[in-house]
Length: 369
Image (cartoon, rainbow, N blue to C red; front, side, top):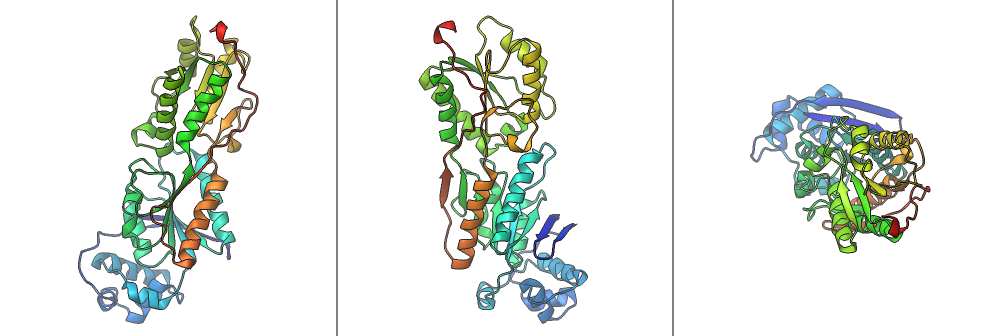
């Protein structure tokens, strides 16, 4: 199932839809075979694939169904001879039930805005068969390049990027990225900086507030990189870290967390948060109910979150994700590759983490712990 949202800035058109396509057969089908199967002329098939002329949706659907059924891929030399760009970028961002809407919206909009500035429209692909969808829109010459969002550690979309026949940029750092470029925050550095920040202010025991467990289980790249780095560097420093219990989406019990972690004699003096704004807001409210104030009694540092688009009960010092910067870099890298025919496979650009200080981290007397 190809699920898509097409944003065309020039006309203000937003098209949403889905198309059920069968699995393509392997073979050496030609454009004449596609025309015969679709019941149209060869020139009509050519117009659908190249975008040179406006073709009705009904006819285009018939052609694309035939393309998929026959496993037809336009000849590379023919595509090169056409020399035509459609000025469309595919943005792959599968939608899940536990998605963080603030982050998702920010990355989509910043990608679309930057693409608009460079003269490109955006085709948002949200279906579960991400690789299949990407192969269809790239091999049919519908799009000129690909941006991947919501990267996992072992991301099949990045691993299979060599099949797309178009430049590809991942906003994230998957383990297999030889056929695509990657832009991201250096989350390994972020983990070290988070530990250093609290240790330098005298904290010796902190609690790590875990993200939604589904993100760890599916291997969300930045979530794993940050946690691994944090734990390793904290051990080197002698900073004790206890972790919150695992919790599913919308299943976090803030009252139990605060009672179990802070209603003890040797309680942590800080929280390193990786959870959502909703979870952290619940914790802040429960801390207040327990007579603990931030930062006088408990410091809070949030990492890999995006509170700019959230309503927080109080300002929190944050090492955020950076949608605007990363989407700018991704689109610039991709468009330059498209227009200058540059090979960007294997390129990795990591940005230094930023820390937005909002007064929720305080110094403590080491002797009091």
